[in-house]
Length: 325
Image (cartoon, rainbow, N blue to C red):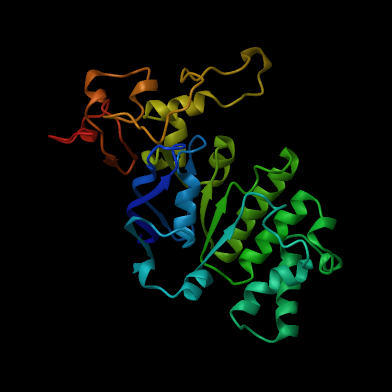
């Protein structure tokens, strides 16, 4: 099956200040990422804070242009698409429902605003569509004329979802859509997203640091580390048999209901890697419990088969001849 959305060789570099009287430095937030997701699928993107997953999400949305690489939607290069056409096909659901909604607008006007921007229908028709979508996400008509400040966090996120879907997009990019919500409300929003995916044949790109959430919703998972994808596999295969040591450490860090096991130990140490000064060779090797001498100087490439791809020297296909950092 052909991928609905595909990214090839994506890079995004930022220039950041290093302090007074010091030259500015390059930050490679996304560094050569290849990912794809088929129509109706859910691509989960996971990793620690600062790994580049939100920057990748913004590039897929067209909010941040890539420094290099190409994004295709249904085989069409996004760079050649009109911004309005792209917005019709790809919509976001943001992390924080408290800051992603205009506090001065009513709920109905927030949801109908994309229709207004695209000149779709008259005012009465736009309101009618907004009310229908609000009803579908679990907010009856009595909420339509309230403002976001009168809603709970979960209700605000439902408004954000309604606003994203009112344009009938093909792809919804969800950037940590449940992280700001209570656990019980998280489950409600996740179940709503799954229902809407089936009903509207949506394709999701789902950004999260919560592996339990990703296991519940994703059909395939990309694990990112320092701007790179280090493992890419179907969800069931990745959670049953993670291959990259970083993926193994992430899964080992998930809390379990068994109180006797205590706090999990990942073995990665307390310090995070410095994205301004990534190590040579494999970017994960300073923290890797299975480090080998080749890891210090040769960067592995993502390779594998249908069961999944991995960038690790423990798997020979990931070590290209003559490759260097």
